[in-house]
Length: 215
Image 1 (cartoon, rainbow, N blue to C red):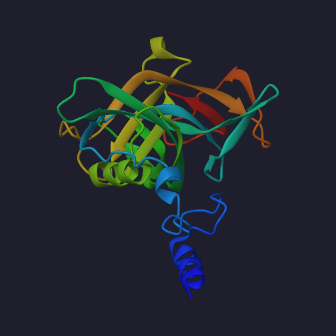
Image 2: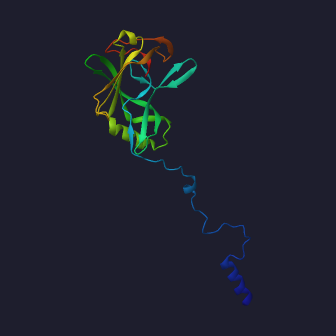
Image 3: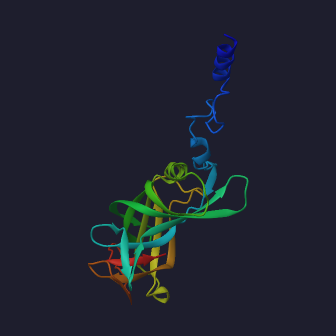
C-alpha cells in the first residue's frame, strides 16, 4: 500500500513526467499580445489649407494612375500636418477619392474643378506615423469636400504655367474663402490610355484638358 501511495502522489505532482512537457498553466495561451502591431497615435493636429500633388485628370475624373515613360505612377494629393503643441510638420500623400466635377471662381478667374472626399481617400505614404483612419476623419471634419481647379494663367507672364484654385466645403483654417495661386501649377498633355508626355497644355478658363496637373 505504501508503494501505491507514493506512485499516486508522484503522478498527481507531475513527478512521473520527463521534464519536457509544457507547463499546464501556459499551454494554449495566445501570443497575440506579442505579435499585434503597435497602436498608432491619434493626436490633435492642424492642417495647412493648401494641398499640393499630381492629378491625372481626364473626361471621366481623376485617374488612379498615369504612365510616364515606362513607369506607372499614382495620382496623389499631399497634406502637411502639425501636431498641436509642436512646431514640426509632417506630411502624408493620399490617393484622392474623386466625387464629381464642379466649377469655382474668383472675381477675376473661372475654373473647372474636381471635388475629392478626403475621408474615403487612401494613404499612399505616411510621414507622420499616425492612425490613418483618425487622420482622414479629421481632414474631412476640417475641410469637408475639397475642391481643386486649374485654368490658363490670367497673366501672360505666368504662361504656359496654369493658375491653381483651391477651395473647401468648410472654411479654411485662416478663414480664407478660397486660395488662388497665379501660375502655381503646370499641365502636361495626357493620351486616352493615361500616357503623359512633356507637352505643356493650358486649359481655357472653365474647362479642363486631359492632362497631368502638377501643383
